[in-house]
Length: 500
Image (cartoon, rainbow, N blue to C red; front, side):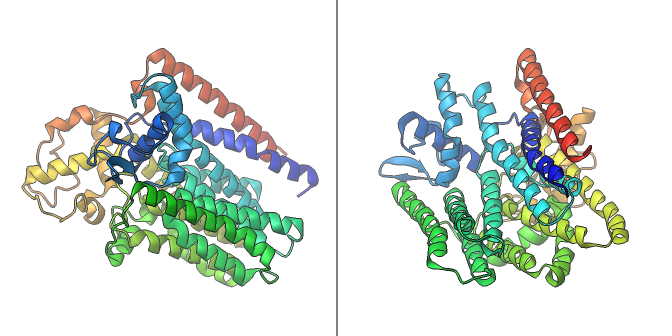
């Protein structure tokens, strides 16, 4: 690659970020925040309004999960980092003298709070692939696959901290690889170590359950570093990480957060890996190629294979042991989304390592799985997850099968006919065809011979897109601005990566 080419690729990162940001904002949702995202937003709003984490004005224990009553106040126990990132958006909402979750400016700011870290994560991923030796075009193709053929596109719309955790884990991974590189010495070595420490500290504050993954990264650096891990380098890594752990401990003590309930590790692993309702492979089909890719990398790029396997194991184990391993109501396995870019990087590197003839044959499979992933995300973002979960609850009640599982909505996790992927596709088909006969050939027909009619769900069956609820003039103006920004960024990106 020539110097001119290197400069063009480096300058391509800004238009790539702007393109992805504009596209993510074009897909912003209309449905009010639910689940953990609602609690995070309520905590941020409370901080902006009163400087406390008292969320009582915004809901109760039923509507705001992960809250407790401590010292006479209802406080959010969600991760402090995710809450702090959302404070500017909620401060804007309050500045406009409204706490209405449908306020246009406030909802746009909330969406941007998730879209910005998601777009940055894709840019970091693009840089990692270039460092791995992929051509700019191939790196761009896999980056777009990460953005739109995995659940990252859904979490780029919902400010619950998942997109930010994904970004920080990627930054930490890049810094860890710099720390072990023999090409980074002196001041650069110390900068890489500090970047790793800061990224890991922030990662723990944003998502405390990723502490195990942070420790695994530190251990990997110790095993693979070209030189012994000196005191100066170790301090730059460990002090910020320890500070992050201390912030989490102080925050949890302040809000009176209890220990998170533990569940069945086997059930969690089954749900996150093999189940029909939450498997990371079904929600990101390109990851079906990750196991054979890791086998290949074990022979050709063993340190990278060890890094991906160790971090994936840490993330999976930390999530699977929780009672709330599924992270509902969300699209896909929320708690393991941060490991998806690393697994996809392994796929991309293994693809690039193939001979030219093999790579051409593999292109068709990669394209097919990316297309399936795109279809899965399309049905996912078209409807709010709470819509389908409420439909399953009505089916449960209407069929007289009130005790399929002790915990609702576990049928959506482990019964194939109730998989959210099938359910969203089924509901979206009815919405597009304006067909209100939900009792005709539903996906669960094999389980329930007399399916209920579900007449009451039609008013709730709306496309989850922000523009549907905005005034026409405002929506058209905002859509036009985003479309122009996306087109300009795409043109600039094409000049830098394709035409040179």
